[in-house]
Image 1 (cartoon, rainbow, N blue to C red):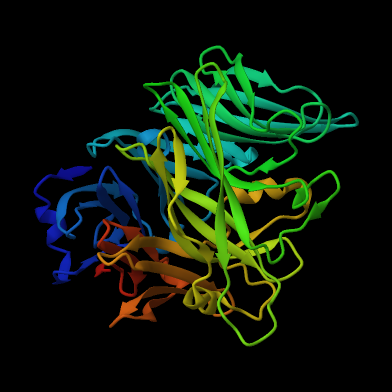
Image 2: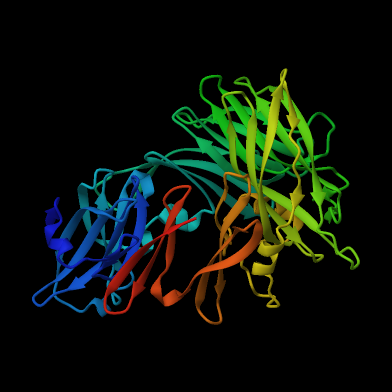
Length: 495
């Protein structure tokens, strides 16, 4: 193993094509954004040895550090594609041979110090918690999960807290505590936030006298319920979908925001949803104090604006997911939403726009600044497909019983890569889509050109090249790909 702080050895092989492109002499390669640097890693075969090369690269594609690790003599074809993660705030690089069910893990801290080399780790046991639980939340060296079991009496939900046993071994955990929910009527539970003191969950109760949506606050040390706060008022049957969550550590205040449905619009018990061609979507904003009491609750109408057309008005249902949520220094509430639209009588929605909303603070209450829910025609055109199996930009629920999960579950093929506003408050999008039949990943830009919005192709890359896009700043991003002749390329784009 050789650490080259001045990276002379690695630079001998590295080719800088332009100030915007960097070629690395590695194969089976991959990349990871970690500690404000890009780490690229892959295999290199030389005359007398094989090596694992790891490069640390800054936002200008300048190599700032590197590490070479000698490997047993063999062909790079004997290895699977390398991969990585940043679990528990470490850079973990995984190296596995094709015929092996074990993997070698190289673990680095944020200063690029190799703190552990873990050999012969069983692949089946890697991230064992994440593999078996759908709801997982990491905080420092702990992991929270929601476990669901079913029997003849119904569903039983548990929150489990696990603690990392050792940072020098494959990630294995010991159970710290388990919190059992009440036996009946829990429909779903979503882990939102954790710190050293508390873990918060959004819970939907379906049936009984506690029907409604709840905020659960559990003591992170003991696993005891600190407070259960109902989002619905007494007798109220509106449905408060999860959007996003903030916790103010100074005031110990919880902030929740999301989409609200009336009972007539959405009723899981009756299995009905009726939001077709609504003239507005409703957003709610809630503040809950340290004692679990509501100190503010407001609803806001977000007007839905359909594009003008000479044809008959189509069926259109909208939902929005709150991707960013913040409170500025003047106590104004800002929330960015990804907007999804369905034009069929099913529970599949397609991404169609992103928009930013502002709630201006006014004497303890909030006023929604003028804005609307609407589609972006170029986004819709980009994602339009006659293939019923095309899942690009899709959010789908199997049934109304689990409909609330579409507001927080991961997309299989997300289409929005990045989004921003330019100096003139024009929205700009980086979007992607996969052509599964051709094996192509498309990256495109939607932005105004001479005041006219255009869809501009960035790259069309074969998926065998393992392409990846990494955002560097609000003005630049990098696309990485594996080229022939053992060349791994990074290319900077400005947007």
